[in-house]
Length: 225
Image (cartoon, rainbow, N blue to C red):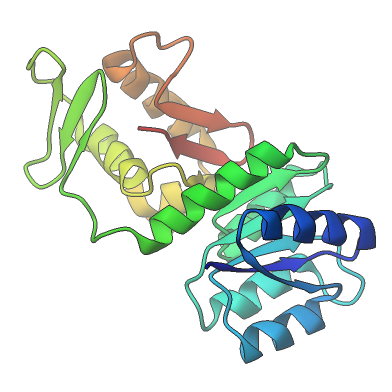
């Protein structure tokens, strides 16, 4: 039974999440403040945390930083904030995903399942196969379903490799820029748009309606195999 820590100051929402998650056989712990959340996590380490950004005592981003300082558990942000900067800050602090309020319970449950799968999955795969292409990470080789090799530039390959090593996980723009270009390029978001558009033209069946390389506007990108 996976243990989930729900951190939100909305009493009704906490109760609703406890009921829905408990009905699906999760062991649910709740906290109404950031301080309470960090104390609870220290006493009983959760398998996953759902954290609201707007907490009454400390900001949810600080809760993420506090958790990430000593644990690698998946952290999903649950936020009513409209500003992208707050979401990006939370992702840069170590959150794995975010869901915006109001949200659908089915979507949140799917995000939880995906995060727990990643956390408990086997060691990193050396290859990724989809209906349209296969990626051999060890050999740095991309082929179509028919076996034709697709030529990528070094930048395109590093982008694709970074995203495919985090399947179904939202990768923040700054993280992608750091891993592909280096820390000095954290704010060069235009680089991402240009190279991702080129990458989509090479691997997506319909680049105008991407199936695999998904953009979360202003936040980051997600690879969905």
